[in-house]
Image (cartoon, rainbow, N blue to C red; front, side, top):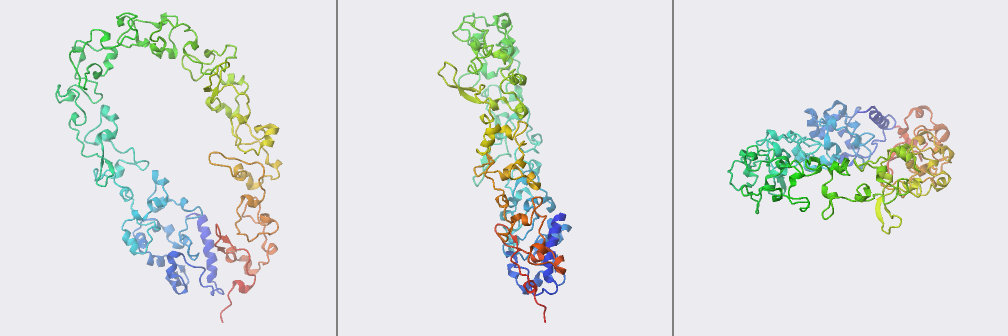
Length: 627
């Protein structure tokens, strides 16, 4: 328990203790009990909870709360801790029927450390709301709680830490008696990070290790129609349990005599070199079915023509270069990178950079001559991505001014080059990706009626508003007219304004200096997607930004909030009781805590402390002495 929490409760209980002091015994109860204890409300039942001369004792509480008492005796849970022995510290009574009987501390239930219960939360459990677990349907032995008078929708007792207490068994008992945490973690149910298939009856090897679980563990439905995955039993003794035999039994039932688990097409048990067609080059990587195929899906292993390349391959040159493919090509690769018979470097256009990976047919197209006219110009093969936006440059917008044959992006255009343009990159602009400014836009090439989309590189205006939305909703137009956005901001950081608030009618002092601009300058049009900060028309009255915590008790009082409070710290008062009130504090009154007279009472939307009107006569606060 924090020192602050203990201090607050000590103050509250010390105030209540005044009620039992000599001279005020006429005021028997400090207030009605909560709804949970309503049946014992009234002066006749005080000793049900209070011990004369000692106050409320935990033993009295446990006479009714027997289930909790049993847990404490066994040392289980939160209440068995020594720092939770005093029930009054968390369960404060006499504040009315609707009062929440559990005090979670000044920061509420969200600040509660679940580890203090003996069951720390981890992983996804940290993201859950308390009542997502502490619900009536999850309580074990719920009938015992009902018999004890417990409200199942309010109690935090009765849960088990076992996974099955909250979660349904996704495996429908297939994996019993294994515990859930043998395979699953609390971060996510899938994947099952603790499960190792090597420990199963069928260890995954080769290509099996890449197969999705559902391919073997097919979904089924249980008696209630709910789907689940079948894990046991799954047939796995023979390949045919999962795989169709493409040989239709012609080569026997033992697949492993030719194949391995790494790949169906890796057949260490079969040597193709022993046939009339040894496999070389890329033929070694071709799937068997590419050559040994026949209608219907079965494989053919004899009578396959192979004398010439054309038996399997179409002639992309349409017989213009003769029938002998081997005069230019080898089985190591059809393209130019592995071509022994033809060297493109001997032509007027040696292939370099990304051109070396281009398929021949991209340039040497069917029906066109092999010699490509205008090959020395990029525009012969490539469209102008910028649609003439750079035609005004000295080089006429030649591609090689910014790009190379290695790759189109990133371009060679550097930050130094950008500095020579109309907009040098400074501050945060230096870290912005090009596409953030040079976005796709429609563009019409001069003299061309077509309107197409491309990246924008030519800008009519370089003003900030060309790229950035106005976050002030037009309330900054006066400043924009005088100096633009730079009047208050710089490209070193938008959220670090150069604006000096001291030049306004509301200089920022003390705590106001730490407040984010949007707290005061927010507008009704603001949304989560777009925050609008109004710079004009903002009231400087305290009530414009701060809720009135006194329920209107001081309405009309001269000086407003400043009569008692300062901007430095709300709790540091300039209020002097002897000077500023109708009741001077003297004698024992000067030593009494404020709460003894100024008690909290119900208010909307929050409870308020009563300051006025209050009686100023002795009889107004103190009961007359007996006899």
